Every structure is written in C-alpha cells, then in structure tokens.
Image (tube, rainbow, N blue to C red):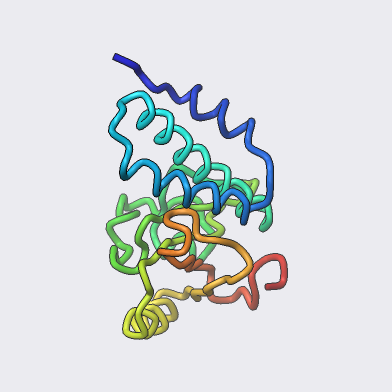
Length: 174
C-alpha cells in the first residue's frame, strides 16, 4: 500500500513554478485526467498533483495580498474585526455553508483574520443577491476578483473573497 505523506505534497508545492493562470490550466488538466484514470498509482500521483496545485495557488493568492493561508478557520465576526479568535467556538458553523463552498482562510503576518476565499459553483444571480444581503449584515463585503483564478475547479467555480466591510478595496487596490 502506497502512503501519501504531507512531505510528498510539500515537495511538489516547492517544485511548482509558473503563473497562477498556468497553475490553473495544469489543475484543470489533472482534474480531467483523474476522472478517467483507473490505475491506482496514477490516481495517487494525480491526487498529489491536484493538492499541490491548489496549495500553491492559495499561497500565491495570499502572497499577492500580504496574507498567508491558514488551516484554522474563523467566524465571520472575527473576520469583521480582524481578530484572532471568537472565544465561543462558533467558527465555521457560523458561516452559511452555501456561501462559502470550498473555503480557504487567510491571516495577516500577525495572525489576524484577513479574508476568506470561497469557490462557488456558478454563482447564480440569486446566490449573488444572497451574498450581497448577508455580507453587510455581518460587517463584511464580498468581492468577485477576475484577476486570479479559482483554484478549486478552474472554469467551474468562481472565486468569492470575503473581507472586513471597512476595506474599500482588496489590499492591492483591486
């Protein structure tokens, strides 16, 4: 039995070079290839490739904004105030799951909540309306950047980034 380790994925992440759009194209190809692959070893290799590409894209997105990808989630209230934690253990359960599909949490260098990148299928006009109503009620704003690819299913999901409401733009001015 072949065991895939975290070290295998990290080695692959470090070896990746190219632009976000090149990584997204490579991810699209790997996702398409794994669907029809029947050989166990090849499926494992493709799985490592997909995980590594997603992590590298999340790293690049975070670096672009001066953030780092956080494996720890946080509640909307924590993001709204750029906090560290909510102290009540609500965290992920307080986000509407339909509005944060495939979430990636980001923090500043001092570990404060900075943003949440979600990868939404569609999203439909109704979902965009729901986001537009929900975000301000939670002192957040949502942006749909078109200058960086979604790294869940490129071309099939859209990137939606939740930020504290008082931020006028994305940190790099977009």
